[in-house]
Length: 170
Image 1 (spheres, rainbow, N blue to C red):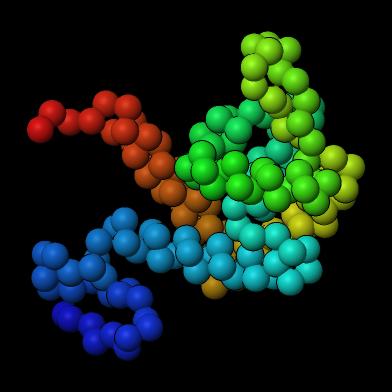
Image 2: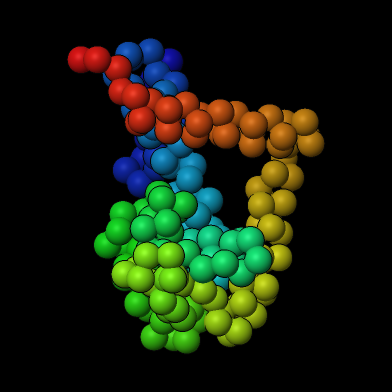
């Protein structure tokens, strides 16, 4: 089964070809992730003027237990974004007064980043919007299917991280 694609449509169906892009898991995950991220990002970009990397940094900082700050290195690990993207996002957020830096007493060299009051207020407004969008995306799936999607994505993530730590011998 080979799917005919329009120039701007992603490959979405499995093909008979072993090299068919439409059936390649990393491609399918990337396309799905980009579609979901773009949908949510467009909704909060219009209202809050945030790009995807900036929101990801804010989301991680907003989820930090007890308001504990994070270093840029920790943010890069938590978001799986490269350090340059994290650095740019942090600069924008700091300039807008949404995050602030504090000295890291643990090592004295790095800075801990935390949401400011304005940052916490925006985070509190965006989270219901993001969760509502997630609910819209899941509307076509039964609750058991929703749980299964989340479970399988977590397993794929864990497997990828394990493989990254211990790559197979060439």
